[in-house]
Structures are given as C-alpha cells and as structure tokens.
Length: 331
Image 1: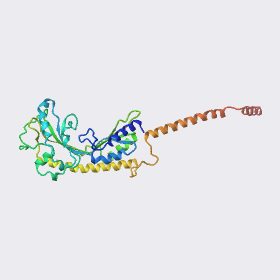
Image 2: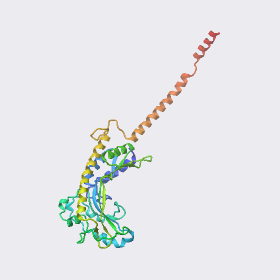
Image 3: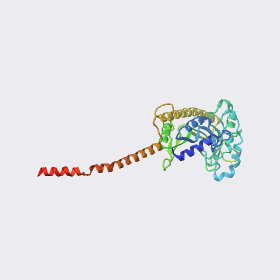
Image 4: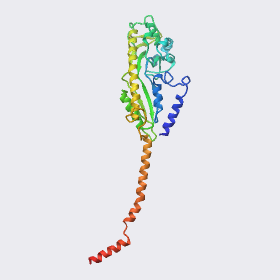
C-alpha cells in the first residue's frame, strides 16, 4: 500500500469521524449528504479506497455573481434576494442558510445559492405560487409576471438558474488496479463521464471521478439587473413543473447510485456479490514488489549455478588420458 495513500486516508477518516454537529467542509451544505453517507462509509471501509468529496445529487436555485461593470449597483439586489428564504419544512434537507456562501456559475467564483436541497421537493406542501417562490428564496413581487423585461444586457445582469445536478464521487485509490475497478463500476452504473487522474509518479495515488451529466439540467428562470430585485422570466407554473422533473431525476439518480454500489462489490469480489476481495488478491504495489523479489532470487540462483557448470565443463586429467589412449589406438 502506498505510504502517501495511507497518510491521506487516515487524515480523511479522522475528519469524517468528527460528530456531524461539529464537522464542516467546503460545500454549501457543509457536511456529507445523508443520501450518500452510507455509500461513502462503505467505500472508506475498503482497503485501497477513500472518498475525498461527494454529493448525493441536488436541486438548487442559484443567482450569478455581480458582473464587474455592475458590482456596485447589484450589491443591494443580492442582499435583498437572500433574505426571503422560508418554508424549510416543505423541502426536507434544505440549505437556506447557504445564501451567505460564495459561489459562481456552477458554484465557483461569485454568486449565491438561494436554495439547495439534496432530497426531492415535496410540492404538495407548497400550495400557491407565493409559497413556492418563498421556499426557493425568490422574493415575491406583485408584478412578477413574464412581460415587460425588454432587452436584457447579459454583460451586466445576474441570471437566476434552476438546476439539477446528479451524484458525484471523488475516490482516492492506492493503485491503478483499484482505480480501474472503481471506474469500471461507475461506467457500468451509467456514470458515463467518469475518469481517472493523478496516475503518474513513483508514489501515485490515482483519483477516480464518478460522475455523469446525463441527468443534469440547468435552466434560466429569472434575472437581477438593478436594485429592484429578482425578476422572473417564466411563470411559477413552469418552475413547479421543472421541480417535478428534478424529483423524477432524483429517483433515477438513486437507482444509479445503487447500481454503482453493487458493481463495485462485484468488481472487488471478482464477479461475486459479497464485496470481499477474491482469494489470492493483492494490491498492485505489493504484487510488484513480490515479482521484483522473485526476479532477484531467480537471478541469484542462476548466478550461483554458473561456476559449478563451468567447473564441470573444464577438461579433467582423466579426460586427457582417455584422449591419449584414443590417439594411440588410431595410430
């Protein structure tokens, strides 16, 4: 096992062992998602594997960061837009407090998450349009219709996105064999954009990204261009419909997650189903050292035989006598 891998895994497991109320990470939610925690624990219990980041999948409303030309003008807009987050009971695990988290388009560089849920949204608890918009962190305005927007200047306005993002896992492995096993399980489960990185170096610890864009969607539902606040470009009925689409994709996402779990177990069991290593299995680095030692041992054995063979091939005194007798007989 790679010493670098062992050190990294030990540090990660120590962090995950912190009680959930005290643990935080860099995600908007700040902790491991409940929907993927058991899978993370199962992977981390395997020799040669440890998760470095994860997301169970999420539906979110995201307001882009202020453009450079309009940063000063939109500060009030951004502040106002994050103060209307309500109805947490309607949506399960929701990160209304993450409005203070800094993020950009796609989650990095600037902007705000107005709403994040790692579970399907219970639309039955969001009766009218006002409750729906309030739950999503979008300020309700009396003239919230979809007319009168004119021509938007995309260089200055902040777009409001409704998006669904499926499960993603980053798994650090101790060898390329382990990485290939995780990658094969991801591809088999339907995570077609999975891949392996960090494969070079004398003490490489390959990193596997298990991911797929097939279930994802990102639609613009509004904008913020001035101090008047967020304006919708679509009716609330459209937003409600897209949340229903997200709920169906949560179900498909869960099916893929379970397919990955079982595919990884089969891969590690050599086709079995109990998740154990096959008989005689050994990590790539251990096998490499064993083969090297065997090669050195064979070379030493050959070297020790060579002097004896040379001595046995040299002519002896009896050989000379026999040769002389043979020559005399010929004469």
